[in-house]
Every structure is written in C-alpha cells, then in structure tokens.
Length: 130
Figure 1 (spheres, rainbow, N blue to C red):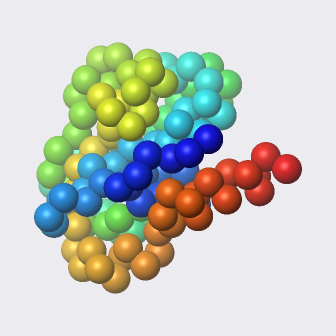
Figure 2 (tube, rainbow, N blue to C red):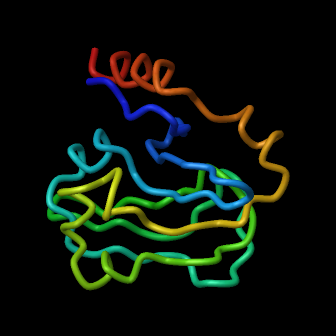
Figure 3 (cartoon, one colour):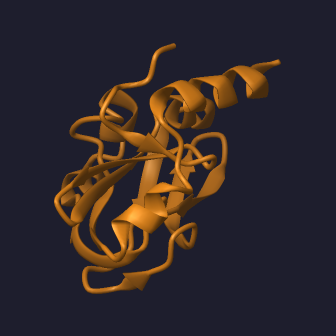
C-alpha cells in the first residue's frame, strides 16, 4: 500500500504535512485500519506546547483505546473540531478531512530527521505485517 507523497511519517503511525512553519498532523491509513471504527478522539488543546514524540491525546475505537503521539513538537494552533463531532471521518479520510491538529513547529529541520519518508514508512508497515 503506497503512502501519500509529500508527507512525513512516524514509527507510531502518524503523518505530518509541513507547510511553512505549520504542520498538519493525523494518523495513517494503516493506523485507522488497525484500530477499526473510531468512536472518540481526544485532541490537544489550542495553545498547548507539545514535544516531538509526546503523548497528546487519545483515539478510541470499538476495539481499543490508543494514545495519540505527535510526530512534531511546537505549539498547537488548530484542532479539527469536525472529528470531535464525527470521529468516523478519521476512518473515511485519514489523510484528508480526518486530520487531527496543526502545530507551529519549533526547529522543523532538526525534527524532520526523526521522521520517515513514504517509502521508509511502507517498509515499516511491511515488517510489522510479517
């Protein structure tokens, strides 16, 4: 399963799309498929300072409750209220309307080094499935 290009990925199955100094964050298609039907999402609050790799919320599905980690640190500048109203958006459009939050990234260049490109993330998924 090829990953969308132009995104960076974490080993915890989150994606980041960096535009200028703001990154949009979500969970990957692999993550939402593994979780099953998502019924509740707890997001970080606007203005919160978060650290790369830190636990910033919860994703609850019919199968499990999973921690939400952030692939990039900085200040939360926006959250996706639509998924609080309709958590199933994450299942239907994990790389689109199901995004989670946006963060103003501190030192993006250094933080990018800890993330995977689409090909490396595909390899990680293949290893997990075997």
